[in-house]
Image 1 (tube, rainbow, N blue to C red):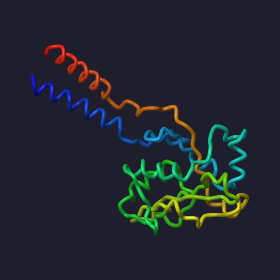
Image 2: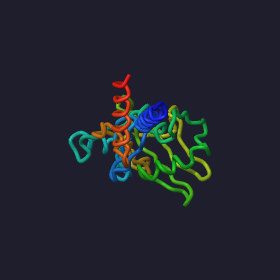
Image 3: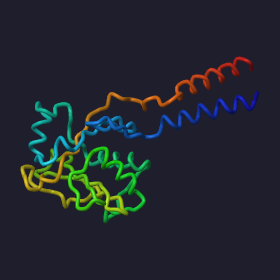
Image 4: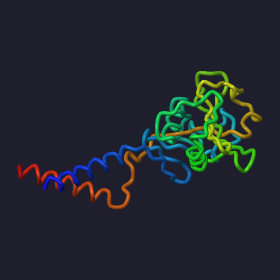
Length: 205
C-alpha cells in the first residue's frame, strides 16, 4: 500500500510541476505567455509603423484592445522564453539561449534579417512619458542568441520617424483569456486518479 501511495503522490507532484511551468503558446496572430497571462501580438501587424501610428491604432483604431508593453513586461517575456529569470549581457550575445531566441522569433516574427542565420525582432515599447520612442530587441545571430539589455537607449528616436520605423514593429500585448495551460493528453485524468487515491487512503487511516 505504501508504494501505491508514493506513486499517487509522485503523480500529483509531477502534474503540479507541469502546470507551474511557463509555456509560450502559438495562436497564429498572437502568442500567449502562460507565466504572465499575457498575449503578444505578432509583429507583422505593426512593422514599419511609427510609434504614434500604432498608438493611434490602439486607441479606437484597428488595434483596439492591445497596448504597448513596458520594458519590465518585455524582460518577463524573455525570461519566460528562456525558462528562468534572464539578465541580458552588455553585448546582447549569448550562445546559451540560441534555440530559445530562434523559437521566440518564430512565434512573434522577425522585423529584419541580415543573413539566413540572423533574424532580429525589434519593437517599440511603452514610451508614454517620453518625447521619443524607445525600442527593445531580441533575435539570434547563429551561434548566439541575442537580447538587447533593457537599460540600452540606442534605439531612441522621434515617435514619428518613418525611417527609424522601417524595420521595427511594436511590442503590443493584452491580458490573456487563457488562465491555465491547456490540458495535454491524459494529464487531467491522471490528476483525478491521484487525488481520488489519496482521499481513499486518508479515509482508511
